[in-house]
Image 1 (cartoon, each protein chain N blue to C red):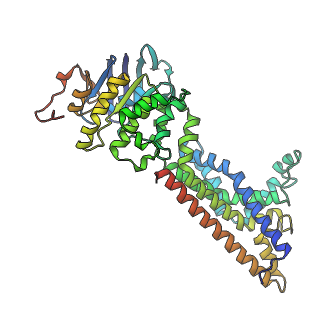
Image 2: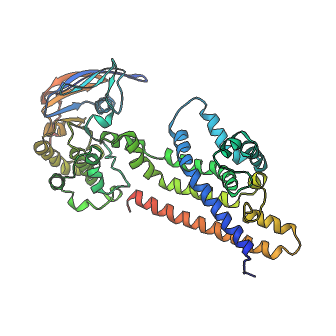
Image 3: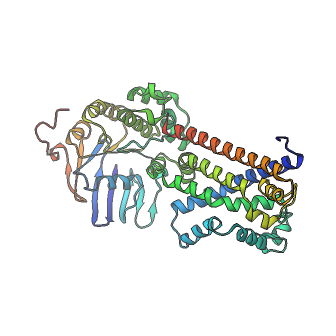
Length: 230
Length: 227
């Protein structure tokens, strides 16, 4: 039963590619927004916080539809980006965007918490030793936030890997382009005799998620040990 | 020569101090809560006065008329009560951090001297998490001295240590004073430490300078001078 068909492999690799790209592209934004929410005080901070967390509470279909309105070929952002050859609608890049948006709040949350837990007096110490603010961030703040950054990346990756509602609404379910594991499973449940294939992909999804969790646990332990000096 | 004139309101507490510190070691002496640490932080640039002027060797660091040199450009070494070593860096990287950030050349000879003076050679490859309190403070001294500061501010550097550790560390501070020859501001409420280290005493009480002078200001009770 475990001979995966070429179409199933395609869906698996596509899911991985979408999840990796979504996580990597979201990371700098996640760190920036996490830092802003953890440290800065500005007018409208609760609003920014709310908008970042919106995909967590909105129905995914709504998020996907809003993305379609904004990033579709005729959407204001989509039409603008299309002039530079960047197209999201019905492309795997759109799937990466949708799953990145869905995973973003989880990433920001983990990074923000780890930044808030850092002893800011260490940053003061670095300043007295001659470190400019940007160096303080690079040599003290960022390394100490690594466990939270890893946790945030894994949460975002796992969310992106399994994202369904926003993705299918925004970029549909095109085999080889936007059909991820989740979308493929959904398709297989709609056709007769699709059970065995669906089950195979279910097992794959479980295995991938477990690997991500175990890798995260291991990396976080490594990073923590480094910080605590063991 | 350090000159400080600073006014700061912190909630109910008001700080208003003026004093000068010549070269050598000057102690800020007074009970806890008198505002000594706030003064130390203002000298280093970690806290801004509401009003006043702070100058070091004729170089104005802060002036409420509009000048405020950020801490990373003041070149004032700071030893904190709790060390504040970087937990993710080795002792060696902690020690060289200030030199690196100031763009000073690598200098193994100076590093070796300070490491010998503080007796921390065997700790270089370890991380702060595995050090004892006394070892941590010695590394913190080294870290602050190695960046070649114009002034060294030590804020109750022995307060977190038990009595035996204090006695063990004081001689290192005396050696640092005599061999590194950096002017120091030494914040403490322990008359015994100050007698060993400082010649000039600025007595701070309740946010004001109560007196400036020598050891006669340290109302030492019998039995307190055992070290």
